[in-house]
Amino acid sequence: MKTRILLCGACGKMGGNVLTLLKDDNEAVAVCGVDLYPKHLDVPVYTQFADVQEEVDVIIDFSSPVGLIDRLEYAKTHQIGIVLASTGFTDADLKTVEMYSKEIAIFKTANLSLGVNLMQALCKTAAEVLGEAFDVEIIERHHNLKKDAPSGTALMLAQSINQAFDGQKRIVNGRDGIVGAREKTEIGMHAVRGGTIVGEHEVMFAGEDEIITITHSARSKRVFATGAIRAAKFLKGKPAGMYEMKDLLSEE
Ligand SMILES: NC(=O)c1ccc[n+]([C@@H]2O[C@H](COP(=O)([O-])OP(=O)(O)OC[C@H]3O[C@@H](n4cnc5c(N)ncnc54)[C@H](O)[C@@H]3O)[C@@H](O)[C@H]2O)c1
Image (cartoon, rainbow, N blue to C red; front, side, top):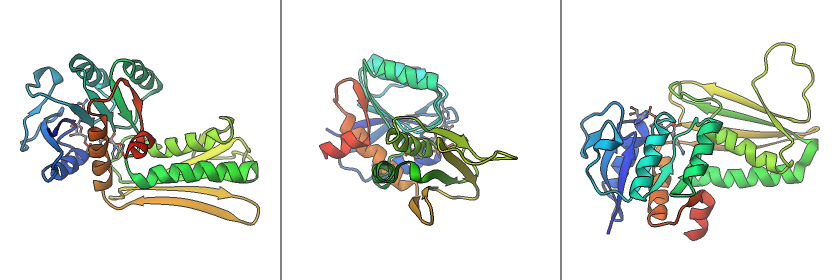
């Protein structure tokens, strides 16, 4: 039987991409959506989870951090998994997610593209090899409608790099004024916003007389929609716990 998907944020840009891909998918189908600002779509769209009538196997969430508990509660009540693809969660939100993962299967990643997940591994390896001799700066570029900064992906990359330094580095967002010489403990973070840029991440390792950059450029939002659908299929029937891209990739 096809994986029946509830799409939270169905009327947004990512929601639209997921719905388009699901039309031609032999293994998964969108059964309904939840969106604060519903539009007429091919599937019913509700403004709240309490109104959902359909049988659902997995939720894909491409909305916002607002209303997180409603999504998690619905998943818990119906004992289904949830792919949390929204970004911009607070530390308190993340603690809530961790708590719910003891009762439901939660797939969470700030970036659902295969390329970025490879980039994450490459950056960690680079940091391990290059060590303290190279300064790490992350530059991310997104469209002018993006609400959160720095991007969830940039933070995810910083976290992976920091693992190579036993968590001793700290993120310094932008620089302004007389900030003094750069400290070795810094990971510089720079958020650029403009036009319709889908998403670009550049990690620069700057050493003495040489620079290494690792970059990823998403050319359409479809890569994320494809990843979310793969994650939903992977999550169906999984036991409670936290899952991420590397779990999906190792199973596939
Ligand atoms: N993990 C990834 O790979 C990845 C990739 C792209 C986007 N994102 C994230 O996905 C989210 C959505 O991105 P988008 O470009 O589609 O944004 P968007 O603004 O185009 O769409 C968001 C949709 O969600 C709805 N919404 C907002 N809050 C809601 C709530 N509490 N309940 C129900 N619906 C709600 C809005 O009405 C809108 O239709 C953002 O957080 C973005 O950063 C993640």
